[in-house]
Image 1 (spheres, rainbow, N blue to C red):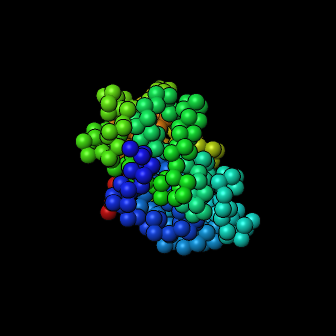
Image 2: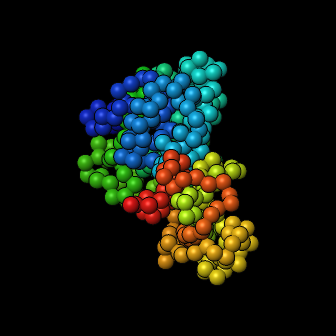
Image 3: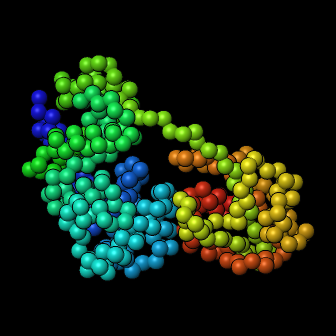
Length: 347
Protein backbone atom coordinates (compact mmCIF):
# COMPACT_ATOMS: atom_id res chain seq x y z
CA UNK A 1 0.00 0.00 0.00
CA UNK A 2 1.30 3.46 -0.91
CA UNK A 3 0.72 5.69 2.12
CA UNK A 4 1.02 8.97 0.23
CA UNK A 5 -1.17 8.08 -2.76
CA UNK A 6 -3.85 6.60 -0.51
CA UNK A 7 -4.02 9.81 1.52
CA UNK A 8 -4.30 11.97 -1.60
CA UNK A 9 -7.12 9.83 -3.03
CA UNK A 10 -8.99 9.89 0.28
CA UNK A 11 -8.66 13.68 0.45
CA UNK A 12 -9.98 14.22 -3.09
CA UNK A 13 -13.20 12.44 -2.06
CA UNK A 14 -13.62 13.50 1.57
CA UNK A 15 -12.22 17.01 1.95
CA UNK A 16 -14.47 19.67 3.38
CA UNK A 17 -14.95 22.73 1.22
CA UNK A 18 -13.50 25.62 3.21
CA UNK A 19 -12.97 29.17 1.90
CA UNK A 20 -9.21 29.00 2.45
CA UNK A 21 -9.06 25.90 0.25
CA UNK A 22 -10.37 27.91 -2.69
CA UNK A 23 -7.40 30.28 -2.82
CA UNK A 24 -3.62 30.41 -3.02
CA UNK A 25 -3.50 33.93 -1.60
CA UNK A 26 -0.81 33.76 1.13
CA UNK A 27 -2.58 36.46 3.15
CA UNK A 28 -5.75 34.40 3.46
CA UNK A 29 -3.86 31.14 4.01
CA UNK A 30 -1.84 32.86 6.75
CA UNK A 31 -5.01 34.19 8.38
CA UNK A 32 -6.65 30.77 8.36
CA UNK A 33 -3.60 29.00 9.76
CA UNK A 34 -3.14 31.47 12.63
CA UNK A 35 -6.85 31.36 13.52
CA UNK A 36 -6.97 27.56 13.41
CA UNK A 37 -4.00 27.07 15.73
CA UNK A 38 -5.37 25.50 18.93
CA UNK A 39 -8.86 25.95 17.44
CA UNK A 40 -11.33 23.59 15.78
CA UNK A 41 -12.58 24.48 12.30
CA UNK A 42 -16.22 24.90 13.41
CA UNK A 43 -15.12 27.53 15.93
CA UNK A 44 -12.51 29.22 13.76
CA UNK A 45 -14.50 29.52 10.51
CA UNK A 46 -16.77 32.39 11.65
CA UNK A 47 -13.72 34.31 12.89
CA UNK A 48 -11.94 33.78 9.57
CA UNK A 49 -14.95 35.09 7.66
CA UNK A 50 -15.19 38.19 9.89
CA UNK A 51 -11.46 38.92 9.56
CA UNK A 52 -11.49 38.58 5.77
CA UNK A 53 -14.56 40.82 5.53
CA UNK A 54 -13.17 43.43 7.94
CA UNK A 55 -9.59 43.28 6.64
CA UNK A 56 -9.72 42.23 2.93
CA UNK A 57 -5.99 42.84 2.50
CA UNK A 58 -2.90 42.78 4.67
CA UNK A 59 -2.83 46.60 4.40
CA UNK A 60 -6.29 46.82 5.98
CA UNK A 61 -5.13 44.64 8.87
CA UNK A 62 -1.90 46.60 9.26
CA UNK A 63 -3.72 49.94 9.37
CA UNK A 64 -6.15 48.80 12.05
CA UNK A 65 -5.63 49.40 15.76
CA UNK A 66 -4.49 46.49 17.91
CA UNK A 67 -7.56 47.10 20.08
CA UNK A 68 -9.90 46.45 17.14
CA UNK A 69 -8.00 43.28 16.22
CA UNK A 70 -8.23 42.01 19.81
CA UNK A 71 -11.94 42.81 19.92
CA UNK A 72 -12.61 40.76 16.78
CA UNK A 73 -10.44 37.97 18.20
CA UNK A 74 -12.39 37.93 21.48
CA UNK A 75 -13.42 34.40 22.44
CA UNK A 76 -10.73 32.57 20.45
CA UNK A 77 -8.18 32.60 23.28
CA UNK A 78 -4.39 32.49 23.01
CA UNK A 79 -4.44 36.25 22.37
CA UNK A 80 -0.73 36.41 21.57
CA UNK A 81 -1.77 35.03 18.16
CA UNK A 82 -3.81 38.18 17.51
CA UNK A 83 -1.08 40.52 18.71
CA UNK A 84 1.51 38.73 16.55
CA UNK A 85 -0.91 38.73 13.60
CA UNK A 86 -1.22 42.50 13.79
CA UNK A 87 2.52 43.04 14.29
CA UNK A 88 3.41 40.86 11.29
CA UNK A 89 0.77 42.49 9.09
CA UNK A 90 2.35 45.88 9.77
CA UNK A 91 5.79 44.53 8.92
CA UNK A 92 4.63 42.91 5.67
CA UNK A 93 2.82 46.10 4.67
CA UNK A 94 5.73 48.42 5.45
CA UNK A 95 8.87 46.35 4.77
CA UNK A 96 7.62 44.00 2.03
CA UNK A 97 5.08 46.29 0.34
CA UNK A 98 2.30 43.82 1.11
CA UNK A 99 4.02 40.86 -0.56
CA UNK A 100 4.53 37.76 1.56
CA UNK A 101 7.92 36.00 1.58
CA UNK A 102 7.69 32.98 -0.71
CA UNK A 103 9.92 30.47 1.08
CA UNK A 104 9.79 28.45 4.28
CA UNK A 105 13.00 29.97 5.63
CA UNK A 106 11.90 33.55 5.02
CA UNK A 107 8.44 32.94 6.48
CA UNK A 108 10.03 31.61 9.67
CA UNK A 109 11.53 35.03 10.28
CA UNK A 110 8.09 36.58 10.74
CA UNK A 111 6.72 36.97 14.26
CA UNK A 112 4.09 34.38 15.18
CA UNK A 113 5.06 32.01 12.36
CA UNK A 114 6.71 28.76 13.38
CA UNK A 115 7.59 25.55 11.59
CA UNK A 116 4.01 24.42 11.05
CA UNK A 117 2.63 27.71 9.70
CA UNK A 118 5.68 28.37 7.53
CA UNK A 119 5.38 24.89 6.01
CA UNK A 120 1.66 25.31 5.38
CA UNK A 121 2.02 28.67 3.61
CA UNK A 122 5.13 27.64 1.66
CA UNK A 123 3.59 24.38 0.41
CA UNK A 124 0.06 25.60 -0.32
CA UNK A 125 0.92 28.98 -1.85
CA UNK A 126 4.37 28.41 -3.35
CA UNK A 127 4.50 24.63 -3.89
CA UNK A 128 7.59 24.28 -1.68
CA UNK A 129 8.02 20.66 -0.47
CA UNK A 130 7.92 21.38 3.26
CA UNK A 131 5.88 19.00 5.43
CA UNK A 132 3.49 20.25 8.10
CA UNK A 133 3.38 18.61 11.50
CA UNK A 134 0.45 19.38 13.79
CA UNK A 135 -1.59 17.35 16.26
CA UNK A 136 -3.45 15.53 13.49
CA UNK A 137 -0.23 14.67 11.67
CA UNK A 138 1.41 13.40 14.87
CA UNK A 139 -1.55 11.08 15.42
CA UNK A 140 -1.64 9.67 11.87
CA UNK A 141 2.11 9.07 11.66
CA UNK A 142 2.49 7.62 15.15
CA UNK A 143 -0.34 5.15 14.64
CA UNK A 144 0.47 4.11 11.10
CA UNK A 145 4.24 3.78 11.52
CA UNK A 146 4.25 2.79 15.19
CA UNK A 147 6.33 5.71 16.46
CA UNK A 148 6.65 5.50 20.24
CA UNK A 149 8.73 8.63 20.79
CA UNK A 150 6.75 11.23 22.80
CA UNK A 151 5.44 13.93 20.49
CA UNK A 152 6.23 16.72 22.98
CA UNK A 153 9.89 15.79 23.38
CA UNK A 154 12.70 17.38 21.39
CA UNK A 155 13.57 13.98 19.93
CA UNK A 156 9.95 13.43 18.94
CA UNK A 157 9.66 16.79 17.20
CA UNK A 158 12.71 15.98 15.05
CA UNK A 159 11.65 12.39 14.33
CA UNK A 160 8.11 13.24 13.27
CA UNK A 161 9.27 16.12 11.09
CA UNK A 162 11.75 13.81 9.38
CA UNK A 163 9.14 11.12 8.68
CA UNK A 164 6.57 13.67 7.53
CA UNK A 165 9.15 15.01 5.09
CA UNK A 166 9.93 11.51 3.77
CA UNK A 167 6.31 10.64 2.98
CA UNK A 168 5.50 14.09 1.53
CA UNK A 169 4.25 14.16 -2.05
CA UNK A 170 6.89 16.50 -3.45
CA UNK A 171 4.97 17.00 -6.68
CA UNK A 172 1.91 18.35 -4.83
CA UNK A 173 2.97 19.26 -1.28
CA UNK A 174 0.10 21.65 -0.59
CA UNK A 175 -2.65 19.10 -1.18
CA UNK A 176 -0.65 16.40 0.61
CA UNK A 177 -0.27 18.55 3.73
CA UNK A 178 -3.95 19.38 3.76
CA UNK A 179 -4.81 15.73 3.13
CA UNK A 180 -2.90 14.33 6.10
CA UNK A 181 -4.31 17.01 8.43
CA UNK A 182 -7.86 16.38 7.21
CA UNK A 183 -7.35 12.64 7.54
CA UNK A 184 -6.32 13.06 11.16
CA UNK A 185 -9.25 15.34 11.89
CA UNK A 186 -11.97 13.21 10.27
CA UNK A 187 -10.78 9.60 9.94
CA UNK A 188 -7.89 8.94 12.34
CA UNK A 189 -9.65 10.81 15.15
CA UNK A 190 -8.28 11.02 18.71
CA UNK A 191 -11.03 8.88 20.23
CA UNK A 192 -12.79 5.82 18.83
CA UNK A 193 -11.78 6.08 15.16
CA UNK A 194 -13.62 3.72 12.83
CA UNK A 195 -10.65 1.65 11.70
CA UNK A 196 -12.87 -0.75 9.74
CA UNK A 197 -13.40 1.86 7.01
CA UNK A 198 -9.90 3.35 7.13
CA UNK A 199 -8.13 3.09 3.74
CA UNK A 200 -4.81 2.71 5.60
CA UNK A 201 -5.91 -0.08 7.96
CA UNK A 202 -3.94 -2.86 6.23
CA UNK A 203 -0.59 -1.27 7.00
CA UNK A 204 -1.44 0.41 10.31
CA UNK A 205 0.90 -0.56 13.18
CA UNK A 206 -1.47 0.65 15.89
CA UNK A 207 -4.40 -1.38 14.57
CA UNK A 208 -2.34 -4.55 14.24
CA UNK A 209 -0.94 -4.18 17.76
CA UNK A 210 -4.10 -2.88 19.44
CA UNK A 211 -2.41 0.41 20.31
CA UNK A 212 -4.76 2.89 18.65
CA UNK A 213 -5.93 4.38 21.95
CA UNK A 214 -2.36 4.67 23.26
CA UNK A 215 -0.83 6.53 20.34
CA UNK A 216 0.55 9.10 20.03
CA UNK A 217 2.53 9.11 23.27
CA UNK A 218 2.81 12.38 25.15
CA UNK A 219 4.82 13.28 28.23
CA UNK A 220 2.51 14.36 31.03
CA UNK A 221 2.45 18.08 31.70
CA UNK A 222 3.18 19.67 35.04
CA UNK A 223 0.29 19.98 37.47
CA UNK A 224 -2.17 22.73 36.58
CA UNK A 225 -1.99 25.68 38.98
CA UNK A 226 -4.98 27.12 40.82
CA UNK A 227 -5.45 30.88 40.99
CA UNK A 228 -8.17 32.90 42.70
CA UNK A 229 -9.42 35.98 40.87
CA UNK A 230 -11.70 38.58 42.42
CA UNK A 231 -13.00 41.16 39.97
CA UNK A 232 -14.35 44.32 41.56
CA UNK A 233 -17.15 45.66 39.36
CA UNK A 234 -17.64 49.29 40.33
CA UNK A 235 -20.99 50.81 39.36
CA UNK A 236 -21.65 54.48 40.11
CA UNK A 237 -24.99 56.25 40.48
CA UNK A 238 -24.48 57.93 37.11
CA UNK A 239 -23.98 54.52 35.45
CA UNK A 240 -20.23 54.49 35.01
CA UNK A 241 -17.67 51.80 35.74
CA UNK A 242 -13.92 51.21 35.67
CA UNK A 243 -12.00 49.06 33.19
CA UNK A 244 -8.25 48.61 33.34
CA UNK A 245 -5.92 47.60 30.50
CA UNK A 246 -3.80 44.57 31.39
CA UNK A 247 -0.08 45.21 31.13
CA UNK A 248 2.92 42.86 31.11
CA UNK A 249 3.40 39.77 28.98
CA UNK A 250 0.53 37.58 30.17
CA UNK A 251 -1.92 35.75 27.94
CA UNK A 252 -4.45 38.61 28.26
CA UNK A 253 -1.95 41.38 27.56
CA UNK A 254 -3.66 44.59 26.33
CA UNK A 255 -7.15 43.24 27.00
CA UNK A 256 -9.40 45.08 29.44
CA UNK A 257 -10.71 43.92 32.78
CA UNK A 258 -12.41 45.15 35.93
CA UNK A 259 -10.03 45.95 38.81
CA UNK A 260 -8.57 42.60 39.85
CA UNK A 261 -7.57 41.30 43.26
CA UNK A 262 -5.64 38.02 43.15
CA UNK A 263 -5.57 35.88 46.27
CA UNK A 264 -4.13 32.54 47.37
CA UNK A 265 -7.54 31.28 48.47
CA UNK A 266 -11.23 32.01 47.93
CA UNK A 267 -12.21 35.29 49.57
CA UNK A 268 -15.29 36.04 51.65
CA UNK A 269 -16.85 39.49 51.76
CA UNK A 270 -15.10 40.23 55.04
CA UNK A 271 -11.66 39.17 53.80
CA UNK A 272 -12.23 41.13 50.59
CA UNK A 273 -13.00 44.31 52.53
CA UNK A 274 -9.78 43.91 54.53
CA UNK A 275 -7.63 43.49 51.42
CA UNK A 276 -5.33 46.46 50.88
CA UNK A 277 -6.10 46.81 47.16
CA UNK A 278 -9.83 46.81 47.86
CA UNK A 279 -9.33 49.61 50.40
CA UNK A 280 -7.45 51.59 47.77
CA UNK A 281 -10.26 51.08 45.28
CA UNK A 282 -13.07 51.94 47.66
CA UNK A 283 -12.20 55.15 49.43
CA UNK A 284 -15.60 55.46 51.11
CA UNK A 285 -17.65 53.26 53.41
CA UNK A 286 -20.82 54.04 51.46
CA UNK A 287 -20.31 51.38 48.83
CA UNK A 288 -22.90 48.60 48.69
CA UNK A 289 -21.18 45.26 48.02
CA UNK A 290 -22.77 42.06 46.76
CA UNK A 291 -21.41 38.85 45.25
CA UNK A 292 -22.63 38.17 41.73
CA UNK A 293 -21.87 34.43 41.68
CA UNK A 294 -22.32 32.27 44.81
CA UNK A 295 -19.93 29.63 43.50
CA UNK A 296 -16.55 30.32 41.94
CA UNK A 297 -16.65 30.44 38.14
CA UNK A 298 -13.86 28.08 37.05
CA UNK A 299 -12.15 29.24 33.88
CA UNK A 300 -9.78 26.56 32.57
CA UNK A 301 -6.64 27.54 30.71
CA UNK A 302 -3.95 25.16 29.49
CA UNK A 303 -1.62 25.89 32.40
CA UNK A 304 -3.91 27.16 35.13
CA UNK A 305 -7.48 27.14 36.43
CA UNK A 306 -8.93 30.46 37.51
CA UNK A 307 -11.44 30.36 40.38
CA UNK A 308 -13.29 33.60 39.85
CA UNK A 309 -15.69 35.81 41.77
CA UNK A 310 -17.33 39.01 40.53
CA UNK A 311 -18.01 41.51 43.32
CA UNK A 312 -20.53 44.22 42.46
CA UNK A 313 -19.90 47.48 44.29
CA UNK A 314 -22.58 50.14 43.93
CA UNK A 315 -21.16 53.53 44.86
CA UNK A 316 -22.15 57.19 44.67
CA UNK A 317 -19.21 58.36 42.59
CA UNK A 318 -15.91 57.02 41.27
CA UNK A 319 -12.56 58.73 41.66
CA UNK A 320 -10.74 56.60 39.06
CA UNK A 321 -10.96 57.13 35.30
CA UNK A 322 -14.38 55.81 34.29
CA UNK A 323 -16.31 54.72 31.22
CA UNK A 324 -20.09 54.77 30.63
CA UNK A 325 -21.79 51.40 31.04
CA UNK A 326 -23.32 51.91 27.60
CA UNK A 327 -19.87 51.66 25.97
CA UNK A 328 -18.53 48.66 27.90
CA UNK A 329 -19.03 46.23 25.01
CA UNK A 330 -16.67 48.20 22.77
CA UNK A 331 -13.60 47.07 24.68
CA UNK A 332 -11.74 43.79 24.00
CA UNK A 333 -11.97 41.62 27.10
CA UNK A 334 -11.21 37.97 27.98
CA UNK A 335 -14.16 35.66 27.32
CA UNK A 336 -14.47 35.12 31.08
CA UNK A 337 -15.32 38.80 31.53
CA UNK A 338 -17.38 39.01 28.35
CA UNK A 339 -19.65 36.22 29.62
CA UNK A 340 -20.15 38.10 32.88
CA UNK A 341 -20.96 41.35 31.03
CA UNK A 342 -23.53 39.64 28.82
CA UNK A 343 -25.22 38.05 31.83
CA UNK A 344 -25.07 40.99 34.24
CA UNK A 345 -26.16 43.62 31.74
CA UNK A 346 -28.48 41.35 29.78
CA UNK A 347 -31.22 43.90 29.98
